[in-house]
Amino acid sequence: MKSTIILSTTNNNSLSKEIVESLVSKLNRNNVNYEIIDLYKDNFNPVMSQNQEKLYENGDTDCDLVKKYQDILKNTDEIILVFPLWFNNVPAILKGFFDKVLLKGFAFKEESNDTIGLLTNIKSGLVISTSESSDNYLKEMGNPIETVVVRGTLGVCGIENVEYINVNSENKSIHFEKYFK
Ligand SMILES: Cc1cc2nc3c(=O)[nH]c(=O)nc-3n(C[C@H](O)[C@H](O)[C@H](O)COP(=O)(O)O)c2cc1C
Image 1 (tube, rainbow, N blue to C red):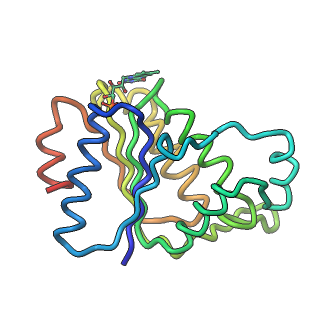
Image 2 (cartoon, helix red, strand yellow):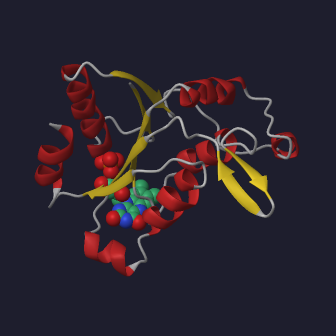
């Protein structure tokens, strides 16, 4: 069993970092093998170049870091995303990770106008946003992360059993107790 945590914050005092620290303690306590992809620490460039967009059509890339991330994902059983909510969406660095790493032919394939997810080795996922928003507000907004990330990205790649939680100052202690302790 291997978990991969993908962290998308550069702020050392952030709630996202606090969550990752608690998750790491929990994984250590449970003897679960894990790896952290720290996108800012890796200096990941989320912008897809002209050449990369050309290569995208063939499921290829000219970026060694992308290849490294793909190797990690192919050897992952559980994926955990931790990020602050920015304009009801993921930060650009994580959006770039989706665009540049989850390539056609690697993460999904197209067959008779349908997409078939290829990352079925990943059996479960936990998507965690940190924000100032209440669950009710996010519901009113149409649950953007649930739609675009859980279903529209991970789901397309064949990753099922994904739970989404939004952690804010009001529900923090409840979520820490339930998910990170
Ligand atoms: C560019 C930017 C956009 C933001 N957009 C939102 C938002 O749409 N909804 C929200 O509740 N908070 C928003 N925030 C606030 C952060 O998501 C919030 O403070 C979060 O808890 C910070 O998480 P962190 O402590 O893990 O970095 C935004 C902050 C920034 C810098």
